[in-house]
Image (cartoon, rainbow, N blue to C red; front, side):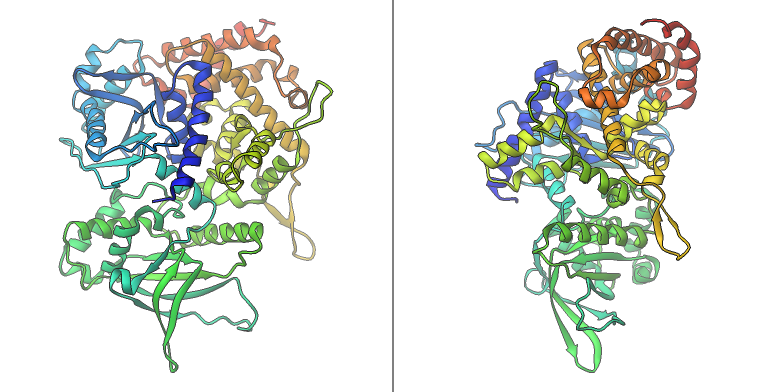
Length: 613
């Protein structure tokens, strides 16, 4: 459990941000969901139901959902927001309450057929009920996410089954989990694991010789070998997600074809002995270790303990082995091939230490991975483009228009939770207040949000509607000149294009436009599809009037002229009507993700909306 002071400080900042955002709309659950979902970074971005579906009598509730038709995976989100939570009492939630919340989402699935007939046709929740009832025989997996602003101190797994669904996973996202994730994004955790004393067993590995002069300090040492599966399972059982926070796949469950195959192998008495041959094993990193050479004549070392041990590739394997262990599968003769990299980076060089560590972990994750997709947003976070944008955001003051000196800046988050970590590194009181004055929380922008705002402005609202990961992939492709390299006549790498302050300012200007349109759409109290309406409104505004909106002027004024407000309202109304009307029997959210939807909207409404102003 993280220290109480650290948890209190983080909770205070978290709740204050929700309060500020809720003050504009009068609704707490939506900003809470948006904040939590931002940290989760799911492959398919969920749609938040406005209003949420809540039936207190039948104990049914859902706040958001997503459906991956290709993978046949349904995600349901149910939120618990306790208004009494505060940084002094640190209220907790128990397993019984969380199980009850998960069951409320489960009941939406089991009652989907009847709900599709009874829910009002104008509500998004009816679409969800229809989607489930029409696809129930095709859904292989259901993930129920229980999101809470309280602390789940017990941290015990919650298990549910749904008739006809092969795999059901329950994930609890509490405040502690968000804080752990933030800290992990900012560097390897410093927990120390004493394998011998805490888990009853050490393991042996071979040292990979370095061809360089051993006296010259290298950035890393590498060991290869194998680790007993039972020891790995025990470590995961004790330390849980802390061991895999740096794994680029954030949702680690024994799911999907690969992991079902792992479990099948482990359960077979004959096959399990071949596990080391069948499986690609794990790649891990650590900051330091209690490592001793067993014999001067043999290149074999005993790993007694590790500090900051992180599994950066093989999290799915680890989770599957742990599930087998918890199911009392005998793992006595099962071994997992393993690679261990000890990072030797000076703590005194804090900035260089962090950057080098992140780059090395990112590279290990990228090149060690052979089975599953890796999020581009994670792997490209350390690209030249992202680093340059981060630097500009720390150096570029926001212009003022009232004669006063500049006093604040935008804050670009290259890694999740970077702002919170930066804030909490400072002493409470004057230091934190000065930081928040210089970097106001409402001026924080994440890399995936920047990508969604860019893509919608550039005429790809269907891409933004697909969520942050797809938008980021397309954003990086559109701007590859800023992070890819060419070679000169001396075979040296040279940037295709430099990131200039103007590039940075125009990106922020697009963000300002999106923020402006978001505020107007929220004030209109439109029922449903808020994100899609915003992206399509931004895209149509730029499609028709883009030549009349100078991005550098938006940057200099830090605002979009209010002369566009009525235009935005008219376009937003048309967008919502079009999405519902043109979808027909299709799911509106899924329809909005298709390029055909955007093309049809342009063809049908460009002429009509062309002369509003």
